[in-house]
Image (cartoon, rainbow, N blue to C red; front, side, top):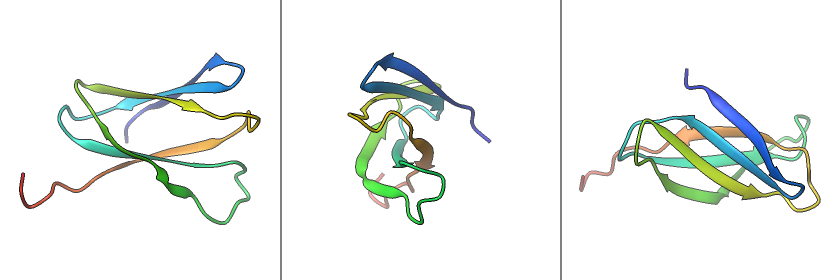
Length: 79
């Protein structure tokens, strides 16, 4: 499985990076607590990897703790 790395960018941002396939699209999902029943799935869509590592800076606001997962998007039939 890909490696996911989370670093503090500032008190209100987190920098999430992961192993990626260049040219593919990813969806970053999060929960504010592991106990939450559902992932927030549509807030951070279509992150396009431009190399073997993709990254996104997430503004967490006052939710300093979040759980993240990354989903590789399917290749569209037009690609």
